[in-house]
Length: 303
Image (tube, rainbow, N blue to C red):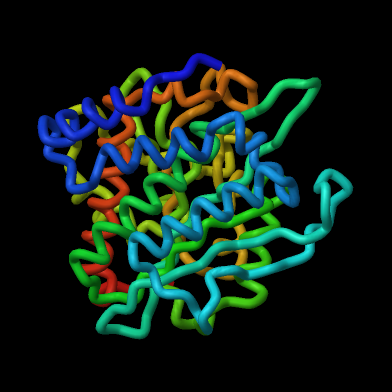
């Protein structure tokens, strides 16, 4: 694994952020991805030592951002139903920013990956350290700009083992399910050579389309709607990440992600391949959508 000096990233990222006028901290965004995808995290397989290290880092970041825990604890423990986990217990990390309204938007990104195989570490920089970095960036923004809706930020475990963290979240939600208006899920945001970030879900919830269309392109990234129609087969992403569990409960969702690339589920999914021009703008597009939804959601019906 080639190592990019962190000081170089931290020097370049603020300039990038200013040039693109992103509303988030690009330096922190990139640092979070680099830390989570380091060899020391051992691929973040659920139940592993590397997973525990990732949890410790994320708990520190939740506190730094200022997310509040439910009932005094960010951790939601649950049992993993698989032979692939090294121990049977996994951990979702959940915090929130209270709004003026009890109704909530749940922002999710899974922090687990596939661990080590054949002596190689699968670091999962794009899948899905990139989604977690964007989740933290969005949380930091809304901490400084208090939302109307309560915003719940959930770094989920067990996605790679069958969306088990999302299932556990919904089986034991921190707020009543009827109070959850929308799930915004991020899974793979940082590697795309065409400047395209897909927003999937408007086929199932067409009321979301005009709201997604309010999100303006940024210099290095633009939203493309799609990958949500049944006739698309494998290219229908409806069931391919944690948002599917919300969809099964009848909770509307938007899933943000890039199309598959050569590094997907390969040991080459390293920080060095993150597109540092595209990724901050891609994360900013998700934040732009959250800002639209926070102001507009109470005025529409998604059901």
